Image 1 (cartoon, helix red, strand yellow):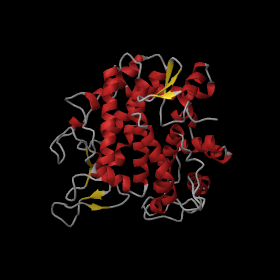
Image 2 (cartoon, rainbow, N blue to C red):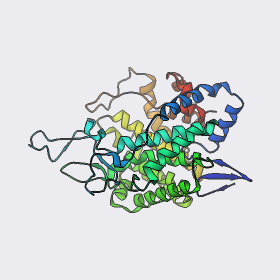
Image 3 (cartoon, helix red, strand yellow):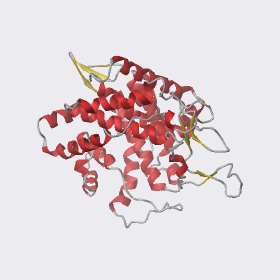
Image 4 (tube, rainbow, N blue to C red):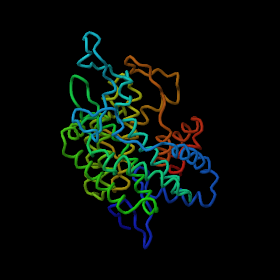
Length: 393
């Protein structure tokens, strides 16, 4: 079986789409089970259709919809402001903004910021593309294609493939490397593009245009000042950088690059971020220490999933001191299983002791420990979650 540059896995004369954000073969298995009326997956399918019908009502948007451009003067350039920075009350103009970790400034999500537009476009396109894949309703594919064309391909409205002005701090800078974390949603765009291949509403020129765009963004991430700054980050920002770049590299057929990045995570991320007891000191230092420990764990799970596609087993990797992804998960588990157990790392913000159900699902699939399944069973409505389609034993 050969992996093509478009993210399709060739099997004889046919081709099955490969979503790099889920385990290899999971998409095909889900489609087969749904085709045979597997009742266990019907709640998830029904929920996906409901979400897709809602996404059909989402009108195309673009970076051109913000009231004014950022420092570059070009509205085609993505722009956002840093979420944890606020006006300085001691200054008449509030400048320069000052940092308040864990306190989100609503300015970062207003109409001047492209972050909500990109996030909604990416999530809607993927939801619609999945619904099109699992049904015969081409209306879903048609709308997903329209959303992607407007945001990324239409010359009048397209976003330039860079994040030079992401998470700017007023009075301090016009954009930061840290802002690249907002481009995480572009991995959903890559998945949606893969799912749309073969649809009559998604032309070869559309597919080629998106591959060119994502290749250009990947090159920006690998060479730009902001991209290199994010790569050098030691905490969750660096982990998500690796996961994004490896995902884009796989999508663009640059498999050796993806493998190199995933392999480097053994030392740059797992060994550098996780202690033998599973704690993540760089995340524990944050105001919302539990949430950030969970957040970095999500990125590590993403990297391990990408490793499944690149022939690198991060799931079972342990340092000489026995630090591992699984230990990082198990460090958090007691505080989820027993909500009354004190979280000893409070830093001015009460911890919300929850883990994403996807973490439990995938941990159970990978490690086979019933503890993770029990934790999943304690959460409400998990049968109707999209991940139920892809992560099961």
